[in-house]
Amino acid sequence: MERISGTVSRGLRAPIVKEGDDLKKIAADTLMAAVENGEVTVQDRDIFAVTESILARSQGNYCTVDQIAEDVRIKLGGGTIGVVFPILSRNRFSIVLKGFARGAKKVILQLSYPSDEVGNELVSLDQLDEKGINPYSDVLTQEQFESLFGKSRHPFTAMDYVNYYRELIESEGTECEIIFSNNPRTIVSYTKNILTCDIHTRFRSKRLMKAEGAEVVLGMDDIMTSSVNGSGYNDEYGLLGSNKATEELVKLFPIHCQEFVESLQEELCSRTGKHIEVMVYGDGAFKDPVGKIWELADPVVSPGYTSGLNGTPNELKLKYLADNQFKHLKGDDLKNAIKKSIHEKDSQLKGKMDSEGTTPRRLTDLIGSLCDLTSGSGDKGTPFIYIQGYFDNYTTN
Image (cartoon, rainbow, N blue to C red):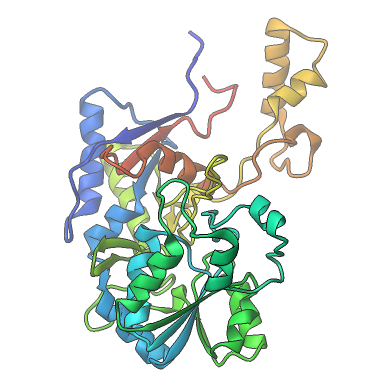
């Protein structure tokens, strides 16, 4: 009988993971329980994905606001610092900002507009046009911004992030000044000691600030890169990818991800006899067309994955074949012609018309986005995602 189903993404329910738990064992036990329940039949090249949050939790990779403040104080001098291009997020940034403020006497907070880096809007482009404001060149104080646009409210949460961040900084006994500018160089005229908080544009921001004459330029990837007074750390990403755990505690992005996925792959192979690819995933990389929010607030979609997940898709566009080379065919003749094309396709289709319109992204970004959408961020209780058939095509039985 001809196979009907294609790729299947399945969330696996697991125990609540705490610090010190053996996550490799929990993950393998969970898959085997699904097999015993008849919910999964394991095949070669299935994919087992683990959300980054439970890996970090099992590692105990946390730091406190005081530890962040101490690192900021040591690295930036404890005086006036510029905090540039933060995202607007209570979960992702507010707790971190508290640490920055606690480690300084004054914070110059430079916000990008009309939105932050991941798409959270302060104002709309239409509002900028109406007021004659050029976001590429105009620098606004908070007073100027609010006289033009009023208090900003997030469309989903109704948060006024501008004043929320001001109040948070001032609650630490730290002076606060807020400006709006999309030019990284702007901050250098206010202070020479700068902490840039952008995620995916941080290298450019650092370069431009240094060229403008800044004396100390760090990113969030330079804070908490080693243990401070017994804290957790992330030597590669620092505070990037961190989340609020409590009002005084931050969960960092996990460490040693590559070692974990390779070890788990070995464990799954020993239990099932199958070659299963393994990855750690965080935020997916996709944009909400209504809220305009780009999901990817982590530095990468996947901080660790096995070698079989390297690369990009090498796929033919079936509708292109059906509408062009085989437009004269129908039914089984069309099906067989397309299957023959798939069997005979080049090992590298990049730049060829037959692949035009296929998604030009890395496998880990595509699969990680699928995992993030499957697991969600709430109460589904499925921190493991099991994907089958991802590497199959129209010819696979």
